[in-house]
Structures are given as structure tokens and as C-alpha cells.
Image (cartoon, rainbow, N blue to C red; front, top):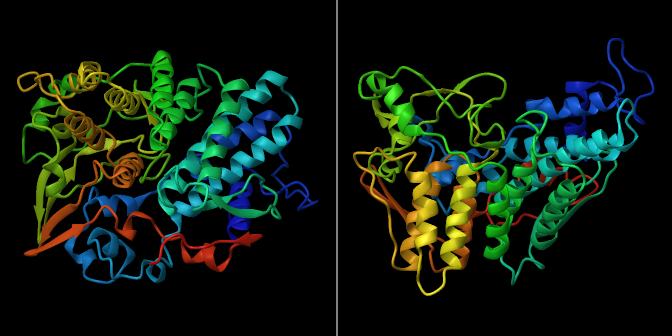
Length: 472
């Protein structure tokens, strides 16, 4: 199993270079993990467990700008960014393996913890249960991203038949790798989070790299929304907000940095507040940047920038129009750490708003709009802000989706939401753009919405077999 070997070696190499049952001789200066602290250290290693790279989903959404020079050759990036349905992405996907391997590396670390922590030394039963609970939430989050990247979106009518991704529950190098159905992977995700909640997940976690109780509730809200189970999603959204309902005041941030923000020629990297201490965090997870050192905000296309609401202080504080040679785009001016892969209060507010709209009685969308406006009041400049109202479900969904797409840009959520809306049909969108005088479209039923497994995993499926979930 090439991917398990790679993952296991990566995990072992980062924290310890000898794995029980596989090497009998411990290299000098290293150790076989035995104490709870040895295993808990895995949860703090962001390279091994805390990355979620989903670049090709961002390219497909056109949320992440690709320079003209990088579109001149037939690559996987170009196929997704230009919505090229004729491209053989399976053939092109012979190098982009980061999404698959990073997430399965994290899963392997979590499996290692779940399997071995029950016998870890120098700990109480409660302390062991807490570390296992952290690992189960992280593992479920990783499987959610994998399932919404490499498999079709959840549809109750077909979820029990269509294949999803390999389900691996052991870090043993000989562990079976079974590609299960979409329903099976969702059942496993939910079961893992519920076990964590029941098994000692604390309200206050060790660090923001350890998902707390609010994170577990937030993840279940996300999962149930994806399954279109709005009552359950609303219930868990309320539980999450009961743990933390804080929203960051982006208007105050704008006022603090007004001089730099309002100077169109000043591209000074502003310190981003969306770091480890961000008040909205339930769980911090690196997205498409690199963990452990600061990075810059990603650049976005001009057409994407136009979809932000007028007076959005968060947008104005993060991007500025920039031209260089043949490229014009909105350049990211934020610098620091970005919680693109984790869970935040803003996402939960917007899950709650959609569920309130879906479940509204008598066409009264007041509660849903109040929840949406609670977020917008901390984002939209006061001289522009007006509370939004909706008279139809379609109008409510469109307003909530606009804010959610913008707030959670660079995370898996806008991609997963788009697939969910496309599958539902009622709120499906055909995306369009103009590039060098030609019009391009991305249909809601396009096969491009499901990413192909990388060549490495197809050619080396391990102790099982893997079937592509997309034709090309």
C-alpha cells in the first residue's frame, strides 16, 4: 500500500523514526512512543496532521487567480481553471497528490492515536480519552474533505450505491484499504464525531490545534447541511454557538488600518487577525498555505472580487487591484496565518441562517435574515450597511450564499456548497466568464465538479482497489 507506507513513514519520521512491530531497533536519539505525551505530540505537528490543500477546487471555482503564463500549457490547473471538459484530468493528475496524501497522512496519525493511546503510559483514563477524542474529530474532518473532493456530493437516493474514498481505520502498514460508498463514509464521519463528544471532548481544548466541543458541533452542522438534513444541522449549529458565538469586528480592523487600506498604491502586508488567536476559531487548520510560518493572502481574479458585497470591510482590508505585465487581479495584502481548513463561528452562523430559511414557516424569513445580518454588521462598513430582508426562499438562499462564499473563500465549504446546490437543482448555477474575448461556462452537471484520484493512488491502491469516480 504505497500511500499508507508513505503516510506511515511520514508520521513516524516527523515524531519518531521507529514504529512498534516494524522495527525492533530504535535509532539513537529516537524513541518508540509509549507515553500519552508522545502520542499527543502528533496533534501539534501541523505538517503531519494539520494541512488541507484543495487548490484544484479553488481553481475550478475561479477563487484563486492563475497567471496568464501558467495557462499556456495543458496542465491540471489549466483544465480546472478554464473549465475544459475535453481535458483528460486523470492523465494530467500525475503530480497533484497533495490533497490525497496530506489528508491520509493526517488520518494515519489519527488512527495511530486511536489504536495506541488506550495503552499509553503516564496518563489517566480521562486524559487518554481526551486525546482520542481530538483524533476522532480531526479524522472525520479529513474524511469529509476527501469525500467532497474525490467523490460525488451526497444524495440520499444514491449515496448507498456510489463509491466514495478509501476508508482506512488503522495505522498498521498492512491495514485493508476499502473504497466504501458515500453513505458509509458519511456514517463513519458522524459516528467518529459523536464518539468524540461522548468520549471526553472538552469545551476548552489544549490548544486551538486541538478541536474543542464547539468544533465537534460545528463539524456535525456542516455534515448534516451537506446531507440536506436541515433540522439536525440547525440543532448542532445552535449547540456550537452555545460554546462560542463571537464574531470578529472587521469594521474596527478597517478603522485601525484605514490609512494603508485606502491608499491604492500601498501593498504593505497587513497583519491578518485570522490566526491562531482569532476569536471565531473553534479549530485552526492550515489551508493552502504552509503551516508554522507566515504566508500571504491568496490572489483572486477581478471577476471574483466583483461578487463581494459593497462596503465589505473584510474584502477591502485583504485585497487591492494590481497589474503587472499581462496580469490584472486583486492582490492579497494580508500576511500571517489563515484558518482556511478549520472551523469558525462565521460558518456556523451561516449554516444556521440557511437552515432557518429552509425550515421557515409561512414564508417568514426574519430569523434567517437576522442571523445573516449579525455577521454582516461586523463586516459591512456602517455608512453602507443596511439590514437585508427576503420575501422568498430563493432570495434568502442567494443572500446567505453570497456572504458564505465570500467569508469562507479558500476553504472546502464554497466548493462543497456549490456541489450541494447543483445536486439539489433548485439553486444550481451555471458559471460564466470571459477570457481573451471568449466566453467560458461551467455547467452544474459537469463532471469537473468531482476531482480525479491522483495517479499514485490508482497505480498503487494498497491492500484493496480504487475505482475512479469520474470519467476524466
